[in-house]
Length: 278
Length: 267
Image (cartoon, rainbow over all chains, first blue to last red; front, side, top):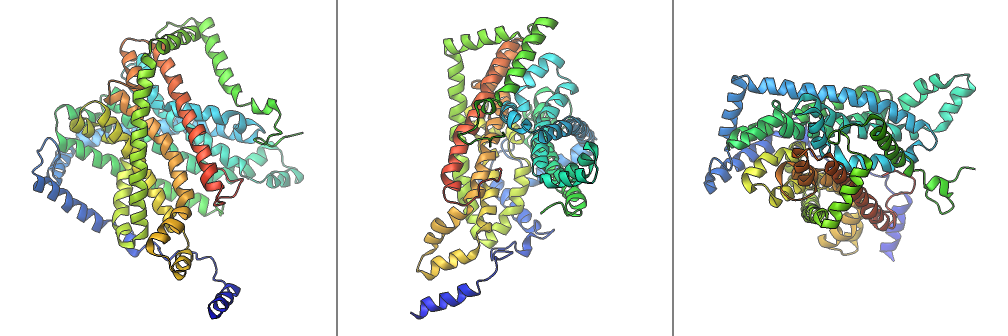
């Protein structure tokens, strides 16, 4: 039948796997592609607020939020809180990396390390840093240290997990090659496992910062006297919705900046450039 | 002779390895309690926690909290998955909708979860609605993003195939797009379930009076570290159970069975 024969012909020279499916990312999603949706969102938001006549202590209008944002900047509250929060995050991330990387490497390199520790790590992750907040409050009170401890705990786990996985994906033949060329353990670690595990490590750090960011906000809500989490949580007591929403916007933007620009750039500079990504 | 973990020939020794860190922690904890003699508020003794756990279980208080937590979690998960997959399909299939929605989804993912807590408390007060909203928030954006990714990853040649055989858009969606997007969706579910569990606890600590999170937070006020540790053990075990008992079988039955993912890749 003609139809069958036609299909036969097509299969013979079957098209290559499409690198980009037809439903590809349209150009609207270029670097400025977010402007149109943002604009529509603002309009929709203002319309809902005005149209339904929602009270000011339920939802704030875009204008009110902008006003609150300006007030926060002007009084210096926002810059101060942003730097406090970011400071905690950065410190927490550094400590988490300092703990997580060696542990992850160790677990990945030993034969049964990963197998032995994976359920345990999953258990610790299920408990989640925030669940340790009450205990941390008993130990350290409502201080910076409490928040820091929670951030480090929360961020270290993905770092360990992903470093471990990253190390394990390195084909052993490379380590063997270095061995045959006379290299010792340290050289194998430096020249084979670290670069090889780099994609995993970067993913782990990225996730760690993401989870740590949430732990930071939660910690500041509960145990902080400063910072963005504290800002939005405290504002709720006075029902100043515009401040709460302004704070949320700042938190979101800050996270996007850290995640996309810093980690995106980091990934581009290291992993992709060294061709470690398959 | 090294055995492949997970096969039926794995020696018992290897299968029990995962218990070692737990045992080690327990041992270290017991030793610390015995040697350092910390105050009960700082580090409760292993025996104290065990007793408290038994007490809470016997009095039924533990089960009340567990029920409250699991109820909220289940409800929010179902809502989050249905809305996430539904909207994700819509956004993935329609180019314009996708382009419109995606940047917004990215931003809202950045603030998903507990960042909404103050607003949620203003809107719903302290209690179940707030907790469910926060969890839904956490799950929805994750599942949505993964669904969109999954839908986009399906090569269009399959849609065309179904259409040439006379299928309608409905057939395309149900028989091509959904199964094709499934690995991504299931992967999203797997992360989402864990996320949801953690968001649940966080939301309950700050925004509820019942549930495991609320239980451990109240204990802090009375310096009952034993309750906190007991509660955390339950939280951890439940979370672990969810991961192992719900998701691995789910994955096995859908994604692997339909041959959409090759064995050997770590999820």
